[in-house]
Structures are given as C-alpha cells and as structure tokens.
Length: 147
Image (cartoon, rainbow, N blue to C red; front, side, top):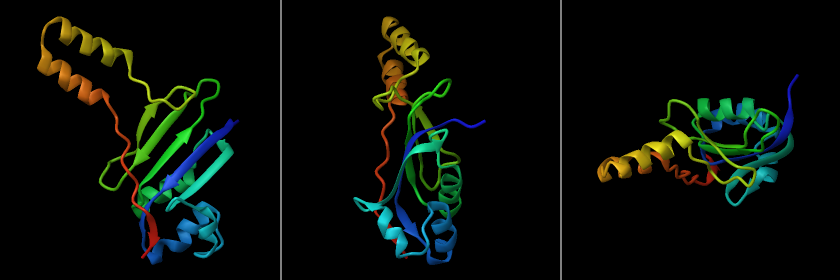
C-alpha cells in the first residue's frame, strides 16, 4: 500500500506543441489554457499534500521523455527521507539529494569523513575536490513556455 505525503514540483523549459496533450494529461489540465492555473513565477507548479510517496511519477516521467527540466521537493514519512530531486535535459537520470525536514540539503557522513581525512593528511587539493563534489547546487529552471 502506498504512503501519501507532501510533494511540490516546478517545471520549466520549452514544451513543443506536439507534446501538449500528453503533458496536459500528466499535469491534470484540460488543455493549454487550463495550464495557466498551474503557472507560478513563470513555471508550472504542482503542490500536493497527498502525493503518492511525495512524488509525481507520471509527470516526472513525461517531463524526462519530453525534455522539460524540473525540480521536486518531497517530505519524508516512515522510512522515506525528505528529498529534493532535479532533472535537466542531458542528464541520464534524475539526481536526488536527501534533505532534513526543513528542506536543507544534507551531506553524507562518508563524504564528510573523506574530506576530514584529506585535511588531516594535509592533502588540500583532494579535500577541495571532495568538498566541491559534495556540494549540490540546484540548477535554475528556465521559464515554462509552449512553443
């Protein structure tokens, strides 16, 4: 049985007209004009306090197939950690970062230990490399538009 908890997805990019029917179905819009009710700050935004596992599985799949970048945040519940997930064209799959319940991104303790070990060994270049690798910057979403 599925668990339902809060999730929010923001979608940007250029939607080609031939993909409009599939995208509207995945969003839950009747047509292109009905999509306007989902526009917030230039992006398509869905916010659902009862999303299945805090995800928008059909919509996220459609975005990846159509080529629309997105960022999703989800609360955690039981064995599911809160997370932020993003995808952009050119990525092989969505990238997931675990967050705390205030949606602050978290770093793996293994990564922290590796950075510490490099610092203790006075290997500053490796420490800097590992620190840069542990940092995740969410990509900016371009405005959503139908082209």
